[in-house]
Length: 177
Image 1 (cartoon, rainbow, N blue to C red):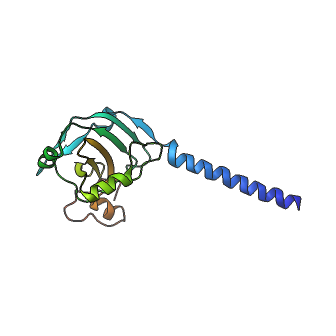
Image 2: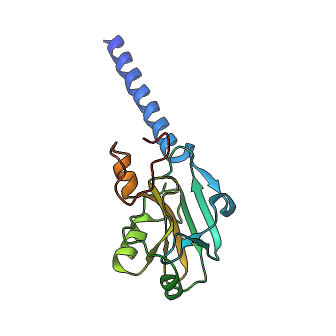
Image 3: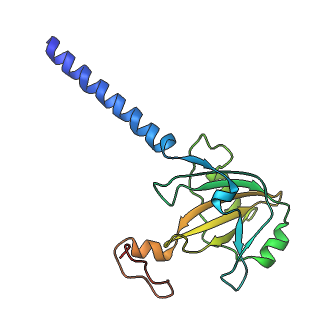
């Protein structure tokens, strides 16, 4: 009976340690804080062009990871009005903010998503297919709060499923085919 209890205790302890290690690796280990310079600043795509234009910003905070293009998140403030931004830059209609680790408290994906759905905030295209299959999206609130995250686009959804790139997508880079 003691050998059985010892074996069960060993299995439970091993599972607990493995679970804690997995949690730590997912939530903390692979993220690094990055500077605005490292992140490429905050850029938006001008209406009707593919040209990116840097906007003025302050209070920039960001995290990123080399393990996935979907792990970048940033928060900032800007003095630009939503009226000016919507007239000048391309709106991103399909914006769906991705959840950030809880310890990166400035980024609340649920609140950003609700504000986008209600029309309180507006999402803009920052970078298209950078890297291939992912767009960088910027959401701005009327009070100047801004948020940045990557989002898989229609090219990535198709290509990463193993199908050829759909019409209108750039050629698939070597190594992704």
